[in-house]
Image 1 (cartoon, one colour):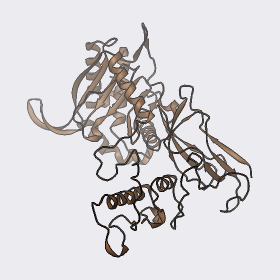
Image 2 (image 1 turned 180 degrees about the vertical axis):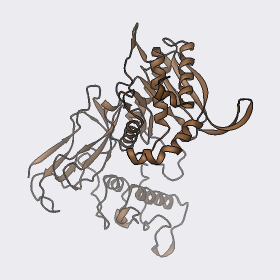
Image 3 (image 1 turned 135 degrees about the horizontal axis):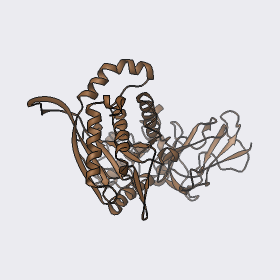
Image 4 (image 1 turned 90 degrees about the vertical axis):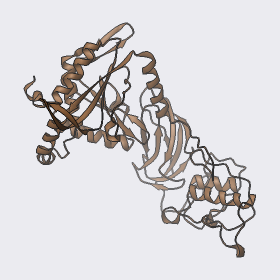
Length: 427
């Protein structure tokens, strides 16, 4: 059967390496064409590698390994028939991951579902047979956590902290039959063993890049923040009044972000100094409105960019926002999705933040921070009334934006949000 190489794909000239964060398949699995195989984390995006053909996969690199663009990480035996492994071909059995040392102990034969690479590794390190461990995974599969728990139980028996129960019964809660203790296992970096007081895990490339850019922004830009508050009554009333019809027409709900995005575009048009960046000793002023919207994911913050926002309506804005959020959380954002933004909006309010100081997304010179909406007493025409209020924070690069321009910009955003009819009348 022919072998197909699975390599790390190119993702742009600026990305040369990454971390193979996760395998979606196990060694020896039969895979379908276009089935996700692995998850790759780089300093800019997280993406998936898929199978180019159907067949049986053999893993060449362990999860968590740093890999280069173009590096071989697996092979697929194309058009493998049935579930039986080929008897010839000179390749090691599919259950043996090539990255494991040849001198390790033979893998114990489990009675449950086939063991994962992590379980096999822990079995080799600790001498614990997965067959005697109670599996709590899907289909009673023994998981990494089960093995660590069993190893800790063995450690406890060895140190005498707890006497084994009489009659050869299993240690309580561990699913492990008493046996001669083995050397203390080495805990996985992302899970403490027993009563460990610390957990250590390496920063992902994306998190390292985020940290680098945030520190760079604070070191290179003369960053200041100005604040204001906005009465969200008009926006809230519009959403309630037109939500059903909007959803029926566009297939997506009318949210708050589209109002803010449109308000930002209007303010940028009136204060063009903010739609600019510094390159060396030159100010580059942009004449387009590609706005980035910060999205929080389990892997870190990403800022996909919505293009030509002055030309699209609320329905298209909401559709693009929903699509970007879905792809970001699924790890399917591409490098092209993140490039070219002129301004960024971030919403800490979804986590309950009342006030914060957003950090610039360099080389942009402005970022708007949204916050939680709270009903608060405010004075209106000499009367105290309760209104849904939000604090706004606008951080800017004082090297090219003066305080007058920054305040004018934020006030303009406030005016448009408090009277959205201005968007229709261009006033």
